[in-house]
Length: 341
Ligand code: PEP
Ligand code: MN
Image 1 (tube, protein in one colour):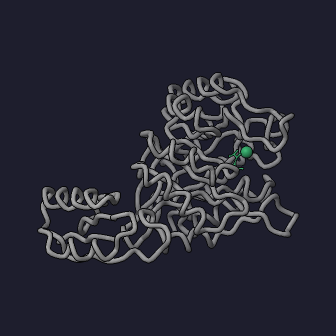
Image 2: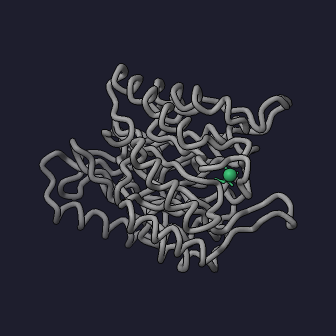
């Protein structure tokens, strides 16, 4: 249920109503909108709720949340959420640009990439230190050593760090170095991991599983939000279909659909979404044209030598050129893409 507070409800009234929700054995999420405050009461006590809240001071009305996901729903918060993490801003008219290699390979590689993508207008640096690989024989990442290299790249450039965490027991370690914790496609429904990242003070980039529906993605986000972490970004990175010309099939309509259903920002990953470097620039530009809240792009100084995903990585000049095109389109549709250069 949503408890909609009156426009003139005081902070004390909101707190009182939230405490009353908790006393009923439900979870209260206070969501401050620009217009008014609402409290999402999560749990299954509809009738008791309606009766006991209609007369509480400052309450305007009590309405059910119809969507299966609750805190993520637009019904609860009609205006878009802007997620901030260091230099990265994603949502509400700001298209964040996260760029960098699939894997951190050396300090030179990550620092050189960070400098170049920053000069091109990126607002965050990506790089995997813990890699979830399809084969156990593939490169698994430099782990903590890689995280330290990312921290060095942040010191050098000021770019926020986006990096993946693959297991609950690594969350504290990765959070020590990262600004944004990436939950990879393979882990979208690892519920214990989602709860764990919901309990740390780091923004989360939640990738869609290749065979997950959009409702399943939103319900996965709900696990994180429910633990109290409101800085969640959703990421469309392509789904598995019968088509084999691209690595995955990238449905851009996800952006528009999610904008209708949720206040959470939506980031597009054209690198994994297509699996071909030659297709990535146009998909970046198209994402900006439909007002995606961010793009995450694999960029490598020498894609041919990359230890993972080189075939879908842009080289440094191609990324710079792509950013020039993205900025022009962003300008045309009235959003801001990346940093001014
Ligand atoms: C990645 O970002 O390098 C990655 C492994 O992505 P995904 O989880 O979308 O496959
Ligand atoms: Mn990758």
